[in-house]
Structures are given as C-alpha cells and as structure tokens.
Length: 392
Image (cartoon, rainbow, N blue to C red; front, side, top):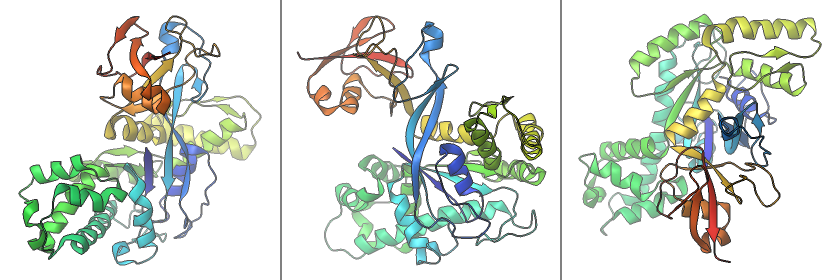
C-alpha cells in the first residue's frame, strides 16, 4: 500500500510529509523544491489490544506508545503540480507518472489562499482554494483521458475489460474499478473505439475516483482565513473529505518530541514539556497550543493518515501470534507485530501476507480472543489477534 502526498507547489506538502514521517525532505518557499519523489514510512494510529487485555506488549514492527499502536505504511511525496501538467508543463508528466503507484492521495491544500496557481506567494486570501481542488483532479483526469484515447480510440478489434485492465495495470487500476465505472454509467465498453473525447473524459473521471480516492488536507489552518475558507469548501464540495491541518505545527511537535523537549503523541490535543526550552522554542510551542490545539483539538496530520488508510482504503489492523494463550511469538514477545490488511480479508490472506510459505502450508486459524478455531473463509475484524495453523 502506498499513499501519495500531492498538491500545488509551496502549500506545505513536503512539510506535511516530514511531519508524518520525520523523513528528510527539502522545504522552501518557492516552486519545485521537490523534484525527485521522497518515499518514507508513515503510521496508522490505533488502540493497541494490550490495554484492554491488561498485558505489556513487546512491539517489533509497530511501536506502542501509551497504548497507542503505530502501524507502518509507505508514503510518497511527489513534485508540486501546476495547471497544464497533463500537457507536460512544469514537472507535470513526472508528477503524474510518479503517482501511478499510489493507492490513494492526500491533497495538501493551501486553505488560506496565499499561493497562486504556480505556487508563488501572494497576499493572504487572494486565491480561492476551491480552484486548486478542481485543477488537481482535472490534471489527473486529462492525463488519464489521453492514455485511454491513445490506446483505444479508433481501434478495430473488440475491447474487453481485461484489455483495459492490461493497459492501466501500471496505474493500479483493477478489473473491479473498471467494472464499477461501466456498470454505474451510461458508457458502453463495446463502443469505446467510437467514443468522443467527452466520453473518454467521463470514463477517466470515474476510474480516477475509484482507484485514487482523495482526502484533502486543508493546510495552514492556524490562520483564521483558512478556517473561514474550509467552511465554504465543505459546502461547495460535498463529495470531498476535508481535514483542517497545520503541518508546520505537527512538525514542530514531532521534532521537539524527538529531542526530548516535549512528550507528544501524534494526533493528540496536548503535549507535556519535558526539557529545557529556549525563548524561541517556548514561543513556537505556545503558538501551536493557542492557535491550533486549543482551537481544533489536533494538528490534523495523523487524522489525515488514519482517514486515508482505515476509511478511504478500508484497511484494518490484525495481530498474528504463535501462542494463543500467551499472545506471543516464538521469541516470547507479546503482540509483537501488527499488520494492515484489507477489510474483508481472511486468515488465509493474513497467512500469505506474513510469508508465502505460511500461506502455502495454511490449514486453519485460531481467534485468540475467543480461543475458537476459525476457517480460512472467516472475515477478520479490526484488532483481531490470530494464530495461524500450518502443516507440520
């Protein structure tokens, strides 16, 4: 699974990426600071079963902080987008090509309207952020439309869903995405060679919506203008998901936590000062507390990650163990690993995710909470603890 962080240049995109991952990414107040995509690990935050079961876990692949489990997944930060990207303007072709691997997108939006269409700084509120929401979708849609026209317009042979899937497989567009768009529209795939540009665009919009769902990080919400704009955006774009964010505030807190200056758990509404602060650091933390946490309750960054993975992509967290009674692995570690798997997954799916050999030798599983044996067709639930049974 890969989540793409996208947006216009100079809106806080790379700051969001750093705040979410603490990975190094160049930040600057001008377009095209990010050229090569940055990839790092972000985390879904969920309640660890250790608290409810009253055990002390020994995390291996996923940290547990005060009963909060942080489960890893990959995040990609790509070059900033400008209008005309699908025609190759700016770093457009590279931007769109880098995004083909993403399963969903977090669109970092300058909700304060303080950057023009190319990402250059302008007076606060001068640009309507609604325009940026539309143009990001349009650039991706036009790019996909061009790919579809190139491969299918005026073709003499009969085109099937399988043919479309083969052409678009590199974009992670699957058979189920294609089928759903065709079945819920008036488009007839058998006539695709005779479609006009408008029908190709309609098909592209549907495929993008199904295969690359978008959540909007309405950034710079420490500014009152941004908060005003967000209220308007939610009314104008009812189909979109908006989460107010202050990526810069989250980065301040995460870096202070790394330096042991504060104790801060991502996504929380408070932090505790634990080290000696300079006047500048005191001022920065006071600003975050008064202008962000006290008003919004959080910085929004962790909320974006959770919303994207657990809701847009419908993933759940499951804990595999070796001993169903002690909840340990072979090394005796309690609840050592947490895995993100698609909602609707079965014990057999989990076995294959852990290791292909475990999947091949799978014979059953045990629900460690009920101590009952479950079949390979059983649908797993969020926070399940599972023992996989294999052939000797």
